[in-house]
Amino acid sequence: MTSTGTALFGSNIGSSSKNLVEFRAGKMKLNGTTVTADKRKGLVYVFQGEDSLMHFCWKDRTTSTVEDDLIIFPDDVEYKAVKQCKTGRVFILKFKNSSRKLFFWMQEPKADKDEELTKKVNDFLNNPPAPGSSGGGLRHLGDQLIGDTSLQGLIGNMDQQQLLQLLGSGQ
Image 1 (cartoon, one colour):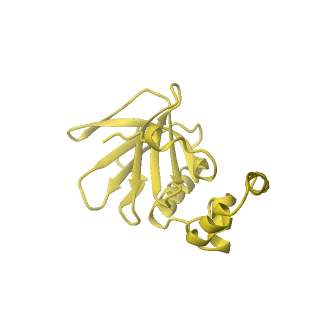
Image 2 (image 1 turned 90 degrees about the vertical axis):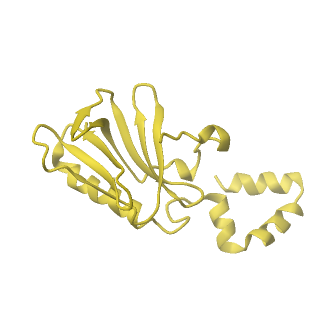
Image 3 (image 1 turned 180 degrees about the vertical axis):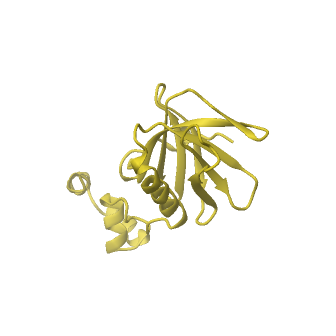
């Protein structure tokens, strides 16, 4: 279940591209009861999309290809260290309502931040920030001031110069 749906909906530019947490980690393959490391350099990151949904992603750092972009609902997953692994720093993203499990091996040079990163991943995925609190920008400001319908009416009555002025002030 790999998803890279940015081509259809555009790139993640602006407030939605700001990762709430990110760290270097490789993927692991599950074969029976054994996990083996995928040797590629990777990046795990969590962000909140413009639709307020939380995304857990894995990207190949060498090719910049996003292989996994999973939409996660609150209280749907748990991210934790695999204590049984004694040869490295392995973590599991376990789905609570299914048998699906994804394994990752930490590629950050020092282990001192592992616990903090694990807590952040769980906090953001299971208790997402309020919509707009991690972002901002013109859309967020408009939603705070007036509703969508009123905003559309206001913008519809502006000439090109006024629109350019408004867009310029949102930077």
